[in-house]
Length: 215
Ligand SMILES: C[S@@+](CC[C@H](N)C(=O)[O-])C[C@H]1O[C@@H](n2cnc3c(N)ncnc32)[C@H](O)[C@@H]1O
Image (cartoon, rainbow, N blue to C red; front, side, top):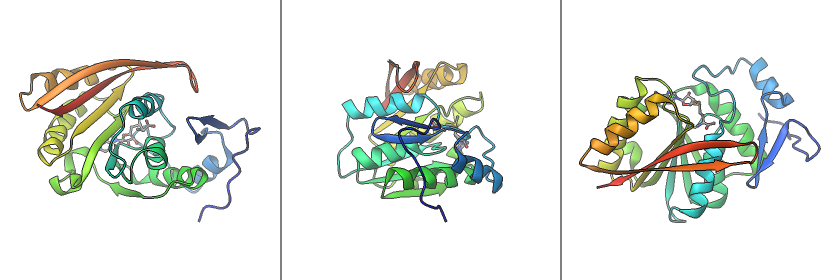
């Protein structure tokens, strides 16, 4: 059970951005979760910068208010929390690593986010029915190994076939991400574009966003 968590403006381990409170890995509540042996093992051990650029893109390219968004490879879940608080009716936060979800729950509490369902599932194991009612699928920093490019391409095809209207994957420029872009660009069932985004908040960052829609 999460106790009342302090997230004051004066706390140097809390970042305030885009209406969110984001705890740093050095925050005492995060350290407490680590001590309780919640040790994410596939890089879900902090909030990655590309997620802020996806938030900015979604703020200007909004999904329908009554829709469901999937936060893919959610890690600590800030992208889904942002969407739940500002954009959509429901969020499904998906990750292969069950140990990320206590960090999501902690951030959900301090940000007062409702209507977030969680699903422990690998990208490659997502079923057609997991995309039921999902309009937008967004994933930040999730294509970082060569093996993930074909896995995500196959999953994107399945999601679009199941009725998803848009898939957004963001990455700061790793080779597997561009392999994924090449696969989606070649695929006649998909329409694909890449846009470059930058931000200075909460720190300087840039990422390419691949936006995939049905062809
Ligand atoms: C670099 S972290 C990014 C986390 C979050 N999206 C963010 O921006 O802060 C990558 C996340 O993808 C998850 N992940 C990696 N491979 C996965 C797979 N095959 N299926 C589902 N989740 C996966 C990891 O557990 C981790 O939480």
